Image (cartoon, rainbow, N blue to C red; front, side, top):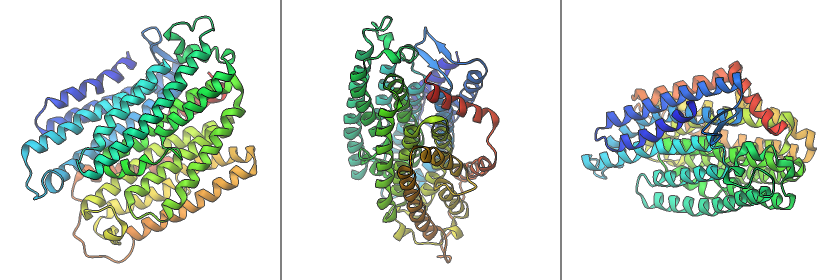
Length: 499
């Protein structure tokens, strides 16, 4: 029943928030729903570790260690974003987008808040369904649903640039998911002659993985290429990444954080499932070569844009493109080290990236801009928590020791040297360039003489989000809880063993 409640709670919270007219009630519904979902996600992870995969409704819903890890990360990101959203939207309601004359119009305020607080739970519901759906066709439907819901969230502010970003996201994402749909159909065709796969249940992961070696090899080659292009578009892998900078910079900060840390994981999850099938059918070489090429391309594309970036919101988008490339590379390198590095990196990135978005959102709300040149420098004097937080997050997300992403990147590089020196050398070169550019931009923003700005950190909701996440990041740099590490290792074993 854990699987069912994980889906029912956010699915019910959305409509409930829609019919409420008071902001505190909407906030309470979201906070309560995501707190319960986080507890259920932790319980699911423990149950999977203790007794193996869990299924419901004759295998319609299914959770192994890989599913449980994605559910846990999604629930964590949803919870921290719901806490931050309280302070973020209260600030917006008071100062910015509801009325250009800064006079809050009650009906407009209720409408906009209702839009966020009703769509955010449905957004989380679709991401949870991605991880819990046994059927690969339902997985595609869930990813498509997450796109549709998040498009409306990207348009939240109603600006011309927001509408353009949402349109770009919808069109590019739609084309990508169309290719993923064809890849899913071809996977079903590749298995249709195998006994027990004649019905739609033949698309169930638990059925296909047992018969992967018997799938039609020619069809699976084409299917994996389409899946890589399709779900790669959703993950923002170059060259299908162009929607990311616009969507991340125009969406409300809690939405951008969920896109960067939640949707990315879901897209990679779909890609991982199909990669396992392809590797068991064709051997690992075919899929690995493609993944390494696209992974290196994503990291390489991110470098020049990070070096010359003028907006700190868009800087975070190109950072996500870089990290998507790193995780795809890890999957391509394969083996125990590659798989372990992949899920370590996914976990640590999901915890670190929201901190950067929260700090960037605080700075943008205070300075009324996301441009480095207009935000001036020395922000650590007027915004000590956000300034220190974004600097800490920068060191963590660029893989500086002793932070946890250094551990995952080092593990991935060990796997890279096992595949040859060229991919490893290119990876290190890109990482060094991104570290340099990222650190220069953020240090110029945060450090320096006091510009004499008034203090901008009086909101306890936003401050607690930053402090809490920063604490978690520091702790994980030195200690990973044993159950979490066991879940990560079990997810890696699914990729290595292939079941």
